[in-house]
Length: 368
Image (cartoon, rainbow, N blue to C red; front, side, top):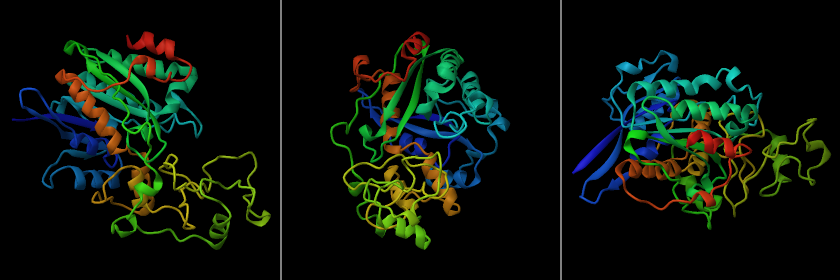
């Protein structure tokens, strides 16, 4: 017997979390097959909504609403067992003005809280950048944790800084994921054990054969100066490499960001992909003197080749860069589903976990 557990998603983007959710398949001891299914989703970006709908829901389904989250009527949405929300991270990122709750995006997590208040899902998953834990001296993170813990019927929450390269993703992408389990279920989520901690997937492995993929694979046409500059940058190097001639060096003061014109190294995972940024931030091939194509970026984010992104080239870059890698999402969501079903799985102990910045003691108090 197959049992479907409906999920809702806010700030869904192109659907990295949802794709991971659809790949979850848990078999219980009595022979039941448990799957996650998409009940509804919301995002403000029209191109991302089209990508999500085309790849993740039936053509005749009308479950993806493209509107500001402030306009969503949560009471009109169907009931759910799980809620996913990778709330926008711009105001908490270590790159930028770090406006926190005073910014345009900082308060958006409260709509996840509102959805929980209305629907009381059995579990939720909230995702954000690692910089969230240190924003406003850690006070912002503590407030978010407390709001999630006390939402609706109350939740046991488990925040953890996931290093996605340890979960099968060919990219050193580190993100905070908070999983909540409704208290009346009397179960606690445990962080799933890494799958590739001892052998990371390299860029070479991830991009093998990508040149044969048709969709979203157009190459960027660079200016002559950019191409010449890249010729002097070795694999893993960046714009500040010592061999770059004076006439090709960047005329930038007070800036030494390591990802500017940084090339991948074939023997290691990629560094973190971004969804936006000007010249020099697009991630560059280790051999060819060019930026990666969007399909190459999608490979590094673990999207399959038949997942087609819609919209202009820079919109597709944003959709890919802002997504949660589906492969990591599947592992975390599988653990969440097993938790609510009371099924054991391999997990890491408290002693094996990395402390989350400087506020580990306060976090322990907050989540208990």
